[in-house]
Length: 112
Image (tube, rainbow, N blue to C red; front, side, top):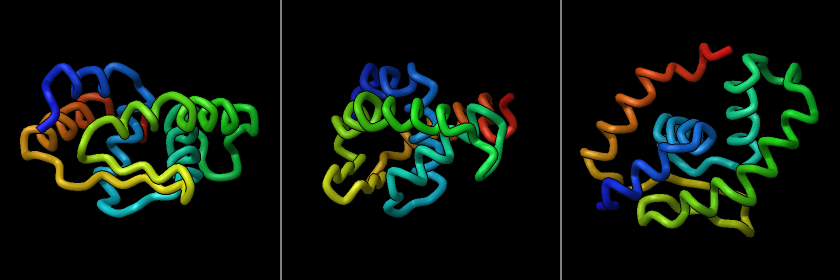
């Protein structure tokens, strides 16, 4: 299992938390574009095509260049740069509990 410091480091950035929440929900490989759209949607409280292009691009740059590489440093997140796919796999019950509690507290889908 990843150390508590590593987990808290991952959770210290909102976009990384959103990525973890979404990956945990999906339970399978997710295209980076889908992650970008979801995070942008949760941040802007817009849906689908209503996300401004500049917001989508801002989130995409942040995820691809900073947040996804950082999350891929833990053993249970697989980030395939070439295929542009991300998957969470083999998390510990402790990690699942922390992520679920954080998501309940933050409620990203309803954020404004």
